[in-house]
Length: 126
Image (tube, rainbow, N blue to C red; front, side):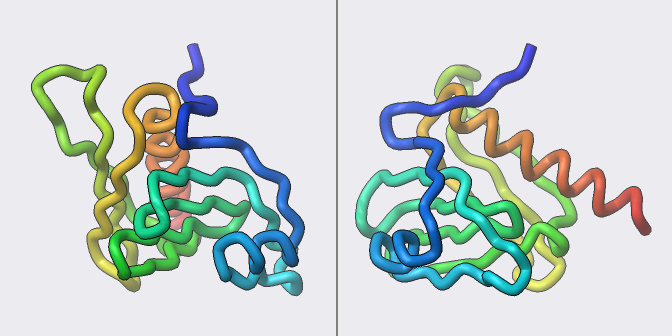
């Protein structure tokens, strides 16, 4: 069974480059064919934007680009009850460990599994 999906603060998006720039101030790399995909919006200072090439993580004034080609691993931060799990760590070749916090449930598991798959795929290419 697949996990993932939209939630209260997580939604699938198909914004064009101008909409992305207007809504969150991010420039998509049109030359590489970058397209918007998913947006988690907890607040103006905490959000995650996913494209087909990278994730942009904004956490309280700090913003990180995690290009998928640089993802090494994703690991869970475990809480006592699985239904409350909402945080994982992505290890990037260039940025080191980046903590990503989302809403728990389907959106969390969906994005965690994206990073886990990408990390495994990148490691298989070594």
